[in-house]
Image 1 (tube, rainbow, N blue to C red):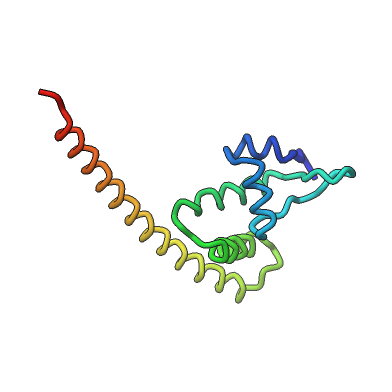
Image 2 (cartoon, rainbow, N blue to C red):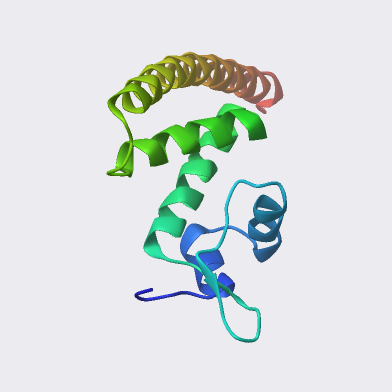
Length: 129
């Protein structure tokens, strides 16, 4: 394993807490690539990439199961031993996830627009003459 990182370094690089990383491991979203003889978690660049994918999916409201399935399909695309049928299935699923993510993003944009409108109303209503 090249350039293994401990959990503190990964937390700093991903702007996540150590607690979050441990929780994601507990719920099966990520598995460190290794452990030291003392049992400390060791992460690779691929692990960090996976963590950043989860971090990007969370604000869109994907469930743990939805994230696990998407990550499984993304990993299938990277593996050489993935069969053409598995690859097609992964691509089909990920296309649906992309469409879903786009819809979720549109909803967030609408919510931000409403928040901006509300802030504008408050600013106008509370402005001192």
